[in-house]
Structures are given as C-alpha cells and as structure tokens.
Amino acid sequence: MVQKISRRIIHKLRHLGYLEAGINAAVATGYDPLVDDAPELARTLAASVQQRIAFEERAGQQVRSIGAGFGHEGEVPSLTGTRCASVQGFSWHANTQVPAHRRDQLERLIRYTARGAVSLERLAQDANGDLVYTFTHPWSDGTTGIRLSPLELLEKLAALVPLPRVHLVRYGGCLAPHSHLCGAIIPTPRQQGVDEEETDTGSPRWSWTRLLKRVFALEMARCPWCPQGTLRIIAAITHGEVIRKILRHLKLSADPPPIAPARVRQETFAWSSA
Image 1: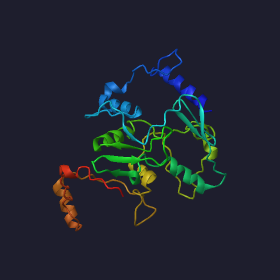
Image 2: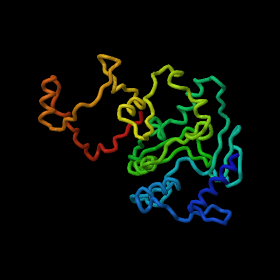
Image 3: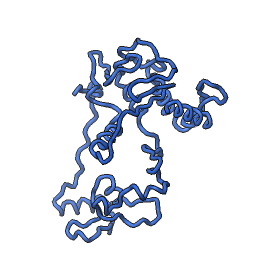
Image 4: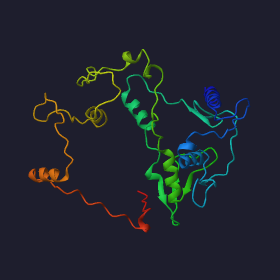
C-alpha cells in the first residue's frame, strides 16, 4: 500500500512539473510558482523540508540534530512496526483500530491527528540561549532532538503556517463533498438534537452570525430576552464621539485598554521550559 501511494504521488508531482519526467529517480525540476509571489516564504518552505536553515548566518546549513549517527535506512521498503511501513520518505501506519460505536476511541484518535505541530512541554532553553526540542521517540537515524536559535525556531514555525486559500482538511470517499452517500451517513440536525440550520439559499457566503455559531457556538442572532426573536443590525456607528457618549450612558469604559509596551531586547525570547 505504501509503495502504491508513493508511486502515485511521485507520478502526480511529475505531471505537475515539480519532478523530472521519464526518469526513475525523483529529481526536482526547480519549478515553484510560490517563488514569484512570495520568494521568502518559498525559501523558508524549501529549507524546512530539507532540514536546513534559510536565513541568518547559518543559511544553507543542516539543522543541528542531537543523538544522530546510526546511518540511513536507504530506499528499500522496510517494516517499521506492526502494520507500519516506510519507503522513499513515505510512511504508513495502519495499526490503530477503532471498533464500531466506540466514540471515545474515535475522539481520542481525532484529537491525536488534530494536535498541535509543536509541544511546548518538550521545548527548553539551554545555557547558551539556544532552544532544544526533544522528540517523543528517536528517529530512524537515532536523532532524539534538534537545537535551534530563537530566530531559526521562528523560521520553522513560519513554514508550518498554511498558505492562503488552501484547505487544511480534505475528505474522501463517502465523506467527500460531492459523494452521493454523504446524506446517508451524516446525521441531520434533528438527529443530533439541535435546532434546524438556516435554509440554504444556494449562496456560498455565510453570514457572520452563522459563522460564529458554527465555530464558537455563539448565538449572536437570538434575542436574550425573547428566545423566539431574531436580532438584526439597525445601525453601524463609526463616529468616535457618538460611541463614547453611548458607552458613558451605559456606564461602560469609553477608553480602549492601553497597549502594552514592546519588550526589551533581552526579553524578546524569554522562553520557559514549563
């Protein structure tokens, strides 16, 4: 399975022009449309996937690893565990099973896949001011962690930020947006015990009240005094003096909170190992 996935992905990359076509080895063509729009971001992403540094005095050098030195496994397909395999940089983990109707295990699996990319509990600062990030399990070559300067860490974090207008989650099979089985497997609002959603008007644009309800479960359009009523905007006040007069009448603070001053240079990277 992992061999089939790697072949199909490499074939797709060659079709898109990212890899040389007609050769066995996966050789990059150097084509990157992001270079024209955001060259600094393209340089950051390229250095991140190569485990190199893109800027500052260590530009082009390898990320400083800790505990490496056991060699490389090569490109031969190998089993890395029970129902786990790795080949050509692609890994496959199929040893996690969720029995039917075990919603607790399904929630645990989803929380694991949706976890943050960086764990602050495993980030510490050494005596030289560098940041050491330790891994939960050693890599195949024996690497147990990496050492980054504060600016190098910010560079790697910038590479993790998704690009604009790119989907963060993609669904396939019966969960795909245009699957004819979608309506048969997704429970209706009534089956979930919630009120009916707004009727679909055919427009892809959602109102701000509907977005707040979907993301933060905030009922911004429902009147707090009469639950059956619906709130709507009757005026948008932008004049500062009028806003302050209304806030004073309601006995609310008319002045915004003060902006915190910028930290001094010595406190710019005040990291804690908590």
